[in-house]
Image 1: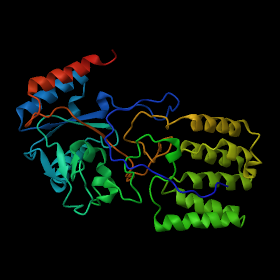
Image 2 (image 1 turned 180 degrees about the vertical axis):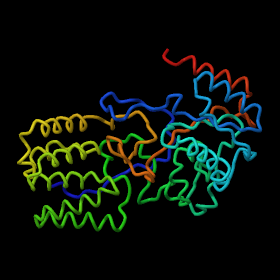
Image 3 (image 1 turned 120 degrees about the horizontal axis):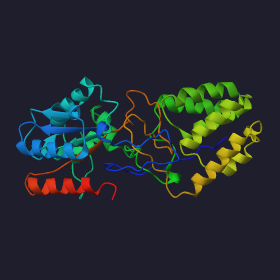
Image 4 (image 1 turned 60 degrees about the horizontal axis):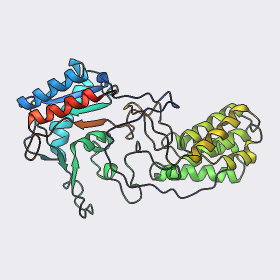
Amino acid sequence: MRPSAAVRVALVLALVVASVAAATAPPARAGGGPETTVVVVNGASPVSRRVANAWVAWRRVPADNVCVLDDVPLGGIVSLEVFRARLWGPVKAFLVARGLLDGVDCVAWSADFPYAVDFAAEKPDKDMTPPWTRLASLNAMTYLWRRVESKQADAWLGTAANPLTNQYYRRAAAEVGLPRELTDAEAALRNDGQAAVIEKRWADAVKAYEALLATITDVESIYNLACCLARLSRPDEAVAALARAVGAGYADAAHAGADPDFASVKDRPDFQALLARMERLASADVQPSHGFRARLGWAGGAEPVLAPAADDRDRYLLSVALAYTGEWGNAAPEALAALEAAAKADGT
């Protein structure tokens, strides 16, 4: 069994603006193509329409993937309530109406949209010392939309106990473990599993761990589940569970290779292959990168969750602002020149 250990996580609230496809992970295919991009236009702004039309042509975005908003708030900064009601709300309705909510990877906001969201009303006590402010970017709020919709600021700002809200962020292997703090019910299941293991009640431990892992990716508990399955002479399931643990970031080949719990499977080629994979993971400074897909779940492990729950808050949506043409921003010709140059640079 794997002994319990404290898990250190990094404080991150960052927008992911690019992703790299990993050839070693076929299920996590790179997204970001024109058919998985939606362009949002301020219908009252000729500049917004001009920028969007040009970018759609350069990037070959389907015409059906253009969302025009008619009630865009004025100004560079809006409240979180306004963001939900007049910006993200209509965009989400557009995606749902066209069946694109699970098929789009990126939302591209054209020119003449607010650039920041003031969340002070929902988190007035947040300690914000310079250079931090109570402003979040339009892109960050779009990226974390599932958490922002919860109307619980800690779900996207993080807390001291659970600071990490962007699980797509690639972290050092040593930081992999629990993606968030356990709920009371989850902690009870984990304790039940550990107690059953101590008393060698393998079947009871399996039941507890499976219930726990239905709601959270806990690397230690996945490993212990594999151990219990091996003890119960369920070798195929044991190796599959161990593979799941490795996919979530487990990389201690020395411990797994010497663990007596795996005596019944240690000579299997697939078990030995997993040990070799652990060694490769342990030698890497950071987790492998994966091409982004909004339909996948990002639970903080080395591999994405291929079939996350529909309401899983660790499913994100890439976001980009095509141009800012407001005060101190670019003129429309400058913005268009930059976007055209970027399009021409593809593949060079």
